[in-house]
Amino acid sequence: MKTDYKPKDYNALSPYLITNNAQKLVDLLKTIFGAKELRRFDRENGIIAHIELELDDSILMISNSTENYPANTTMLHIYVPDVFKTFDLAIKSGCEIIEKPVNKEGDPDTRGSFYDFAGNYWAVSTQTN
Image 1 (tube, rainbow, N blue to C red):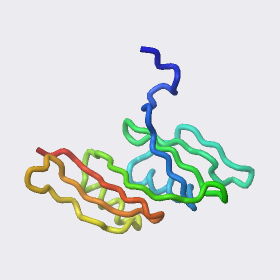
Image 2: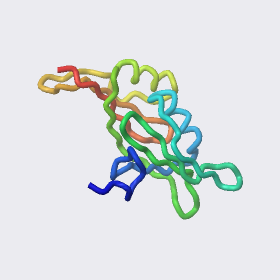
Image 3: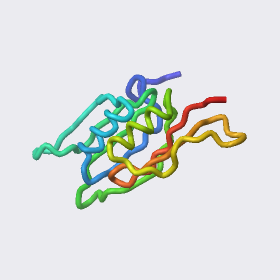
Image 4: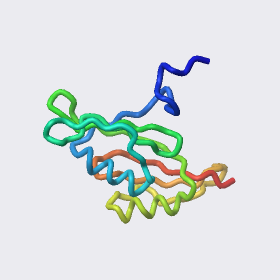
């Protein structure tokens, strides 16, 4: 299968977040998820025009909002090796608790959720059953 239509190791679909403080969100995602910067393009004033972060096997794209591209929020779900550790890092980093990690009957995942400072809803899970 031909794969040179996209960057090596990228998924075909990548979420794209537009936020009022892209650098703050990048720093938060590095702290919580160990995100790694892959590509970055800044405007002349140093504000992020476009950045690509690797979170485990996925790519998340982010840019700073502009007059033509206002900030938006979304819900994202990510599997992590240790849902409790990740959740604790998020809360210690200033995220707002939606639901502490719990394993509900019939669900093979232990999952928790939180809002980041920009209002994005993050569900974090570890498959435990």
